[in-house]
Each structure stands twice: as C-alpha cells, then as structure tokens.
Amino acid sequence: MKRIKIIALLSFLLLSVWQQPANAQRQPKERSIEQLPRIPVDTIPTEQEGTSIILYSNNTWKYFHKDVGELATYEGYNDHWDTTQVFAYKDFDYSIQPSFVELNLVGSLAEFHSPVVGKVLSRYGRRGRSNHNGVDIPLKTGEPIYATFDGKVRYARYNTGGYGYMVILRHPNGLESWHGHLSKLNVRTNEYVKAGQIIGFAGNTGRSYGSHLHYELRYQDQTFDPEFLIDFENGMLRYQVFALEKSFLNIHSHASEILEDAEDDYLAMGSLLAEADDSTAIRAAMGNVPKEEPVLSQSNAVYHIIQKGDMLGKLAIRYGVSIDQICRLNGITRNTILQLNKRLRIK
Image (tube, rainbow, N blue to C red):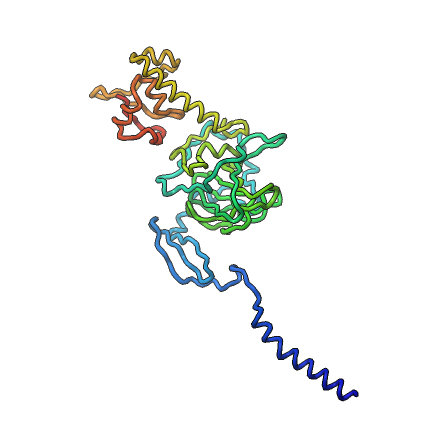
C-alpha cells in the first residue's frame, strides 16, 4: 500500500511540473505600456525648428527640444518652482503686484491649442458658499486633454485636495494652466511640452461628479476667469497679447460681463455713426472725449498709440471715423488683436 501511495504522489508531482510551463504559456502575465521596453525607434521632424518627435518601441512618444538648455533659462521656470505642491507662491508679497501685467500669449496661432473644445457647463465664480476657481467642460472619460501653450510641467500627480489626477503647466510668461480630475497622466514633472501635446485624459477622479475637465488659469497662484482668454466652445484664443488687470484676479470678475460690455460698445458705435456724421457730436454723446491729443504727422495723418482697454469700436467713436477706415489704413481686419504701445493710423 505504501509503495502505491508513493508512486501516486510522485506521479502527481511530475504531472504538476509538466503542466506548469504549458499553463504559463497559455496565460502570459499582462504588462502595462510603462513596463514594456522603451527603446527609441524613429524620429519625426515637426514644423517648429529645433523640435522633433521621438517614437518608442512601446508605442509611446515625446517631444525632443534641441535647445533644452535655452528653454531652461526662462526666468519663469526657476522662480517659485515647486513640483510637490499646487501652490508655489505662498511667500509672495502681493502688495507689490502692479495694476496690470502685459502677457505675451503667442507669436502665432500655431503656439496655441484649446485644451478641449466644448460648452462650459460651470463657469468661474462663486458656487454656493465656496469659490469655483475655473471652468468645467463635460467630456467622456479618456478623451485627450491638450497643452494650451508651450511650457514646462510643474506638477503631475494625484492631488488629495480634490483635484484628483492633475497637471499644472508653467508657461514662459509666468501664466499657469491647471487641469483637474484626469483619468490618466501623459507627462512627468519638469518635462517640456508644446501647445497641442496631449498631457492627460479626461476623467472623474478627486471630488468630481461626472467625467469632465476642470480648467484654471492662474498668475502667481491667483485665479482669473479662463474665458478672458479662451472661447472654449469654438476652441479659439481671444487675444495675442493680453493686459491682465489686477482687478481681474477676483472671483467676482467675470469675463462674460466684460466681453458683453465691449460688444455693447460696438453696437452703440454703429448706431451713433448711422445717426450723425459730426465727430464732436458723437464723442459728446458717448461721453468719451479723448484725454490726450492724437499724434499728427507732417502729412496731417492722425495716429493713435494703443493703450490698455482700446478697441477698434471705441477708437472709431473717439475720432469720428468708421472701423472699416481704420482697418483699411492699417491693413488689418476687425478681428486683429491690438498690441499695446503700437501706433495705429486713424486718418
């Protein structure tokens, strides 16, 4: 009996050893993309000089910047740089902040990409007893989130303060874009990114009720309404150069109200020009007599130095001319962004 039991036990052990490799082959252990070998296999040039794309064997890719050393010299990437906390300016003295800051956003439209395109469901402002410091745009889980401008990743990790998986990009002008509730990150801290690069994927992590992107724009940790800069529904940038006024860094300052006021100015200007031709009467009706005298050239042409708050409609009212005339004299269109301190011909 003992011999039979020993033979049976040996047979079972041999059978187990013989079957184990076969089972292992039939059910290989799955590995994530991050665990697969990451070997460079090809390089693709881009339209931007000095920037190319490296493709890896695990189906991932990243941008390669030839002049990384030059990018690292941007002062905005060295001042108050913290990769472990969302707030980097805790010791900053805001009393010395100027009344407005001129932000050069892009040199061309190729340097901008809307983070997503969609209708804003929840706007910037007060929400009950708390502040809603950005905008919420509904998305399906897994939809890509893009870098708005070129920049460097300051923060890319799970945030326990409610943002969930989060990416913060610092841009060369000091502006920061915050992306919350992501399902997955696609960048690492201290990595340089280009406008339009996928930095993560939409999700429902952190304190969130449904898949969406929570998007904030901040300057020195202070929030302002992202809709000042971006038309999310159409995926368009509103300005090339933006004067960020100190008053905008306030939860009660809403872009929609200010933009509506600007649109009303244009409509009022059109109505006045239709009713009167006398420039003095128009200026008196608007209560907008210029504080400074226009610049006259030897040829009696009239020029205006663009100041903060100037718009084509307001300038047309002030000088008693039409928007079309200003556009024709300067070779611009009604949608051209006016740059501060530039000379604009009026007559």
